[in-house]
Image 1 (tube, rainbow, N blue to C red):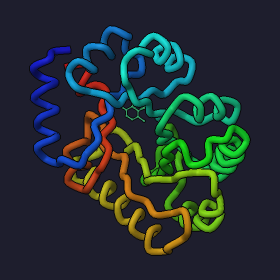
Image 2 (cartoon, protein in one colour; image 1 turned 45 degrees about the horizontal axis):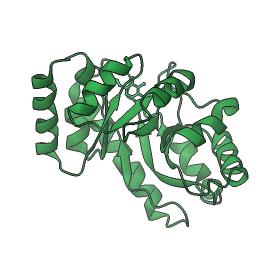
Image 3 (cartoon, rainbow, N blue to C red; image 1 turned 135 degrees about the vertical axis):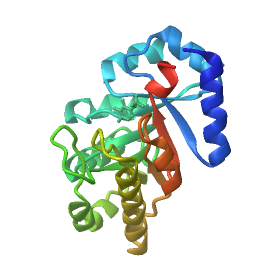
Image 4 (tube, rainbow, N blue to C red; image 1 turned 180 degrees about the horizontal axis):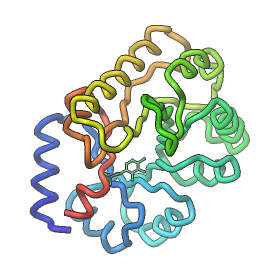
Length: 221
Ligand SMILES: *Cc1c(COP(=O)(O)O)cnc(C)c1O
């Protein structure tokens, strides 16, 4: 990690949008690398595997870090994820939302975690997520999950699309958010768009991203 390069990137992004939350995706990165990123001014970190994350959280206990879960949400790990992550970006089905809602009640964590709904905008066998139509059809059921604080939508684009296609898909996510808010359902007023990774963040910013999830751009520079 070259501090100068990362600082330039950080300043560049913050110059484009002051509102944007920069999340350093630290999966597979060492404790040492996370400490260096922290010293460069990153405070939000994202992990995709629970066991790996718990070890890092324990070791980095003394730093004031905010943790985001971005990996596949498995039912049997949902409890530990609720207990150990402030943000959960990867709620990808009604079933897992129902489970989270029930656990949040059981654990007295009502509305504590900030939850985002993962949406699959383009066919991609390797990715999960709500299809936009399925999400729209599930809105009433989702709005009844009173223990959950659902703050926005998240997406991961298929790899290798053109910048123009990336931009179009990101705009689609923003439009979907507006459509959901227009329903005016209780408990469903979304403010966040978690979109943009190392390969596509410029288009995500242009389309209105509020949270960038950057791994390689930070740790491999
Ligand atoms: C790994 C990962 C990222 C970061 O990807 P980079 O290309 O390294 O920036 C962002 N979001 C999710 C969900 C990821 O799994």
